[in-house]
Length: 243
Ligand SMILES: CC(C)(COP(=O)(O)OP(=O)(O)OC[C@H]1O[C@@H](n2cnc3c(N)ncnc32)[C@H](O)[C@@H]1OP(=O)(O)O)[C@@H](O)C(=O)NCCC(=O)NCCS
Image (cartoon, rainbow, N blue to C red; front, top):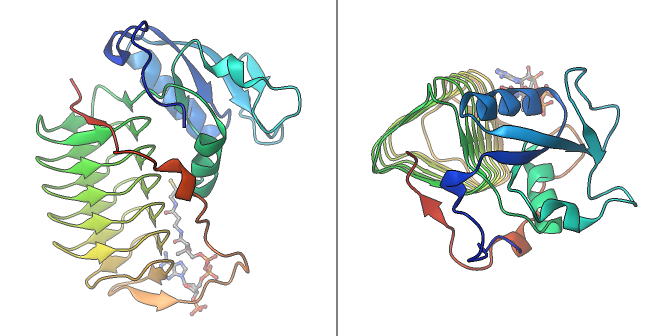
C-alpha cells in the first residue's frame, strides 16, 4: 500500500487540487463535495466508459486499463469515488496514492469522531461523538452515525440510514437507504442490509437481511460477496479529526 505520506508533501488539510477516481453518478456527488470545500478537481479516472456520467470532465483511463500508468496518481491526492464497496477495496489495493477525506460542509462531525483516509461524508450527514469510521467508507446523504459507533473500512451507510449508539458495522458492509440499526447491534463484514430494514439483532458476516424486523434472505445474485481486501490493511488505520 502506498498510503504513507511523504514528508516533502503538504499536509492533506492544505490540499487545493485533487483527482477523482470514478466518473459515474456517485463521482458527481463527490466532485460537488470537493468544489464546496474549495478543492479543484484536476481529472477523473474511469475503467468502464459505459459507467460514465455525462457531466464528468477530463476523464482518463484508470488502473485497470492497459495504458494507465500508476505514476499518474502520485502527484496529487485522490478520492476513490466508486460506489461499489468491493470494487473500491479492489482498486485501493491496486493503486499507489494519497487519499483525501471528502466531507461536505453541511455534514456535522463531532470533534471526537475519527474518520479514516479516503472516506467520503456527504451532504447533511451526521457523525456523533466518539464514532470511529474507517478508510474509504461512504457516509451518504443525511445518514446518521451516532455516538460510539464503529464502521469498518469500505463500508457504505446509505442515504438516511441511521446507526444508533454503539452500533458496529463490519468492513465492506452496505447498509441500505433508510435502514435503522438499534443501539449496540453488530453487523458483520461484507453484509447487505436492505433499504428500510430495521436491524434488532446481530448480523453474521456475509449475510443479507431485509425488512422490519430484519430477517436473513439468501443471496440470489450467484456471486459471493466480495472479500478481497486482506492485503489492504497492513499497518494501523490512520484516523483523523475533521475540521
Ligand atoms: C437487500 C438487497 C441488497 C437484496 O437484493 P437481492 O439480493 O437482489 O435480493 P432480491 O431482490 O432477490 O430479494 C430477496 C428477497 O428479499 C426481499 N427484499 C429485497 N429487498 C428488500 C427490502 N429492501 N425490504 C424488504 N424486502 C426486501 C425481496 O422481496 C425478496 O423476497 P422473497 O424471497 O420473499 O421474494 C436489496 O433489495 C436492497 O434493499 N438494497 C439496498 C439498496 C440501497 O439502499 N441502495 C442505496 C444506494 S445509495
